[in-house]
Length: 366
Image (cartoon, rainbow, N blue to C red):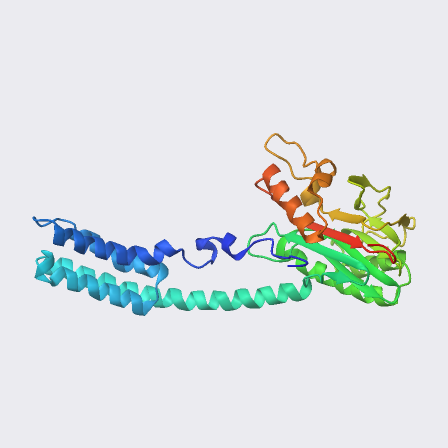
C-alpha cells in the first residue's frame, strides 16, 4: 500500500492485545473432550482422567461465544453421566461443581464477547480517525512518485510523533516530513495541526521558506495559551519545480534528504535552521538549498528512528552505507527493504520510524 501507515500489522498486536484468538485456542476444548472420550473407550480399565473435563468450559471462554461454550459444557456433563465412558460415578458434589463452572463460563463468555465487539468498534473508529489525520500517500503526486512507510513506537496506533505528506498546489509539488515533540497519541494533536497548516500553505505560499514560517506560526499559536509549553517540531520541506528538474529544500532542525544517484547515496549539503515553534521568524531566515535533478534520481528521507537505531553493541544503523545496496526502482520496495534491514540491525526498535521516498520524473526523462 502506498503511504503505508501501519507501523503495526493487526497480527502483530498479539492475542492478548486484541487480535483474534489463534486456531489452537478454538480447537483445544473440543480436542480435549474428544481425547478423553477416546481414551476411556479404548482403555480396557477405567481411567482416572475425568478431572480433565472440568477444564473444558473455562478453555472455551478464551475463544468461543456463549452458545458454543454452553454446548461444550453440556457435552461435558453428558460424558460424565453416560455409563459407556466409565465416568458415571463422579459424585454429586463433583457434578454440581462442573455444572456451576459451565454456567459461570457461559456468563464470562457472554461478557467477553460483548467487550470484544466494543473493542472492535472502538478500534475501527480510532483507525479511521488516525487515517484521516495522516491518510495514505497516492502512488504519484504530479510528476513525483512517492511512498511512505510509518511504524509507530506505541503499539496499537497508526499515528504518533512523526508525520509526512506530499501535496500538489499552484506552485508545484511540495513534501514535508517531520517529528513533533513527544511520542504516541499525545503528539497526534500537534501532528494534525501541522499537517493542516502545511496543506493550506501549499495552496497559497509561493516558496518553501513561507511554508516553514506558516508551520512555525501554527505551533507558536498553539503554545501561546500555556506559558510553560515548549511545543516544537523538526521538519524538512521540499519544493519541486513544475518540470521536476529542481527541488528546493528547507531543513528546520532536521537533516536533509539523501540523494540516490548512479548507485550512490549522497548526503545533500542542507544546513538545518531553528526547529519549528521556537521562533523561526525571530531567528536567521532558513537557508534554501536548490538541487538539480536527473531522471532516475530518488530522494530518501528518514526520521531519527532510523538513523539513531542501535544494535546490541551500540552501533548506529549505517543508513548511508546500506542504502545503495537496498535501492529498488519502486519507491515502496525501497522503503520496505530499508525497514527489513533496520529490523535485522535493531530488532527492538523503540522509536517512531518514518521513511519517505520521492522519485521525481523530470519532463523528457524516464
